[in-house]
Length: 625
Image 1 (tube, rainbow, N blue to C red):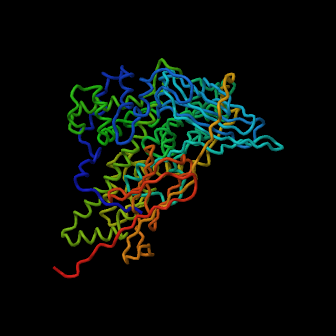
Image 2: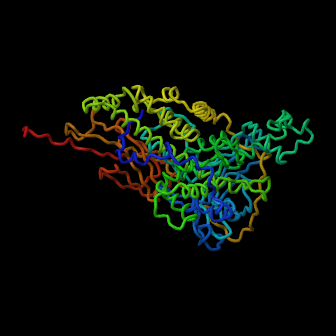
Image 3: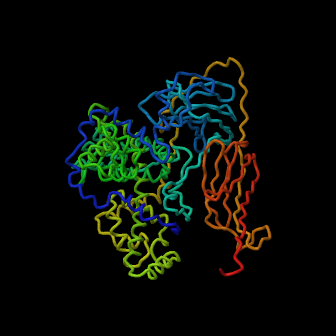
């Protein structure tokens, strides 16, 4: 259910990309002046200011840090854009092992190594992923490092090895890294997923996004570009029109097809954390738009890269993200004091061209004609555009509700309409979380005006703004099928999850350093505590909550001493925070934003901490003035 205070009319002025009068000339102006400067253009994504941390804030320290080496508490700079992970194999294995992997948000910048200790034995992995053989139960302490000395956060993990008659089972008992991520679109809409779906979950590790799908367009491109050898297949493994793989070609391409569709998962995972977009949504969008082949195509607009971005979509993003506009503008114009929406069309087109070029991974001098590092870096742009579209969906629904109310002639009727909508009779009160994502998919694929026209028609007909009603009112070709297909792929995403085995991927071997001085293995402490927050109004002044005194839908903010924030809303007056995976001893602040109520304490190793916020019943006047 959509329960949200609607925005003021002023916010509606932020409406972007609907009925743009000057867009006839979009294709006529290209950013040729900057197309030959990829190093300058690529800095746009790295330093664009947004309301959430940008990719540069996560990675720019890679360029400024100084050289360092072990110990694991380095003198170099910690970079959130440098990530390291540990993974156990699935099922039984003949010999126990774990896989360590690492990646940088800027893949072309520097090489990444993994260095650390398994028990007291020091090791170095010069490539990722890296297979570490095990002798038994083990403790790991490791980091990823770049050549310039930047390091990832330290990973501390406990690994258990169980021997059976048929082999070994390896499991990871604990890892000190556990980072919750807020769904930025859910927060924008004020609507949460109440169905328990998994397609909008934020996975903790990139490899949890690995899929094994048969993708015919991708297989065709792999064959056409010589990445897969199909010389022994009839007709070279392709149909006579060269646009479809034969059964033989598909079989030959299967291994490379799986590897190719998962090579972007690390950057999908990182972009989802930074911009608050569920990673399965980002990966599904890339699959639908390009099948993971970052080439360019033309429908009625030029479309580029993994997400098939075009200038219409980038226009929406530049209007919604002033930080990105300022950074992109500085690359092509000398004066950026004028807001993007107020610029002349030719200058807007220059800036759009600079940003669109970030998604263009074609490269005649590169292997296969593609710059795959640039394609990986462009994933953040896709996440930013998805976020801009879901924000714009919110504005469209605000505008539609206001337009509907404004059509009523008298204030009494308008008040009754709003009251009815709030009670669940019409309009926004029936709009679900899934509906809102379908609207976002339509906005991404077919444009905002397509969605706005349909929503206004539904409001005018006094119908609930649900996907079914909006889809029936939609006139733009292909929009409904695209959104329904997108959601079908999301609902079936987990059916195609895949974890590569040893034989499926190339695993580097570590170099073990001769032990010089025994290093004590740190003891891993991981909290299993829960924090239970109660919020109630003590109407009868008895000091304890009764059934009718609990406060529902109250926002509760939990902030850790490591500057992590988790937000929940109370249900029947209670919000529960599961702190499993956090280190005990960190400071916790629980507050009610805007109500000046908070409580501080230290996170225990286990058990339950109860925080109660009690509000007094306001005193009522005894006399009528």
